Image 1: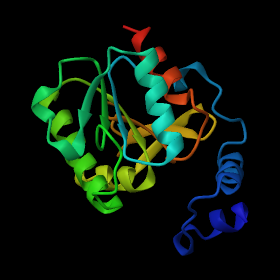
Image 2: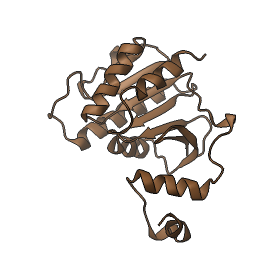
Image 3: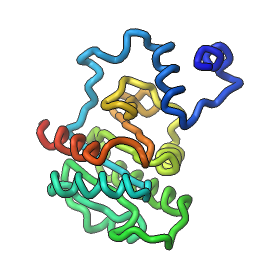
Image 4: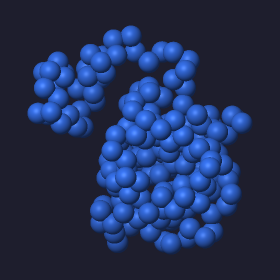
Length: 195
């Protein structure tokens, strides 16, 4: 199937299947992404977790427990003014998970916060980490991103690259319900040990 997709890419849109993603990557990059130059820049990190699934909440809890220096912004509670100047920022929908907002409302709120923070910190390159498909798509639309130029895989299932190929706009993405509970914690620890 991966080969058929690559033979006529304009006819297909591959989404959501980890096995298909791995097969496509294997066809496009048979040697893999093993070079040291593919280590993403993590000195400044902006994590946006729009997914409200249980696993995403547990990943956020582990991150906050292990890396208390992250500045936390609650997108749906309009507390942008209270974030600090930290190099590590975490945007989540709310302090306590609720069903007050639809997935679309959360995605829009998350995208607004990401854009505002990036504009505020213009001149500083931030690794943008987007969790949840709705959130990733909303953020990229809000930032007028047309494509992500892939650079590698930070962890299994966590792709990273450059927004529109711009080396000053690195991004990582993962599905909300994907990865083990310690995934965000490892990312946060990698960021806090650099720089």
